[in-house]
Image (cartoon, helix red, strand yellow):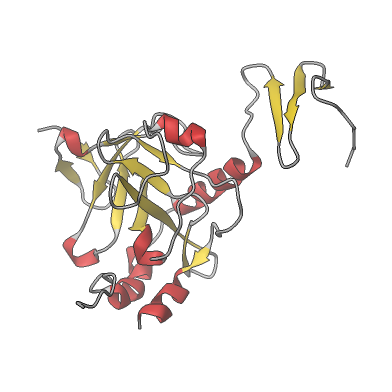
Length: 150
Length: 84
């Protein structure tokens, strides 16, 4: 089984089919093409997107439904073609949709709803689908999610 | 901001070797063709913004900052559907 160095979990072994591939990298990380989604039982529903090329690069993500159950995915045709989809996927069905978490200067977490990571389940191909519209924020505060859940 | 009026099929040149051609216009969209040297990075503006957001998301951060959020999210919310 292949092994990789990770930012949060030391060196781990992984199944090759678990890997996801970004044919175009991610904005700002064009050279990072292969990522391993990882979960930690004590930190569910967080999903760690660990880069294989850069051990220190690990995005923290949530499934989009955790942040906004009513989220409406809208990908442009270039992004759809890049991951081998012919039409808008239903999140959770033929594609997984993750949103990247960041921390502002105030140390409060926010989620990037403007550019979700969409993974074609059948092929493992992924893209960070930057929306053409501005319906969603790239810094959606997570405290609103928390207050909605409590 | 410099404003130039152009029709489909017409171009503008930037710094001599970057050409932006208006290929097609519709009432809501403009299709542009861009010819630029390989070393010139051309992206949609929102992709440039997301690059900055990704760099910031990849910074050294403490997982502890997420603990309060995770505590409130546990168990993961399931779509509430009542049996009828």
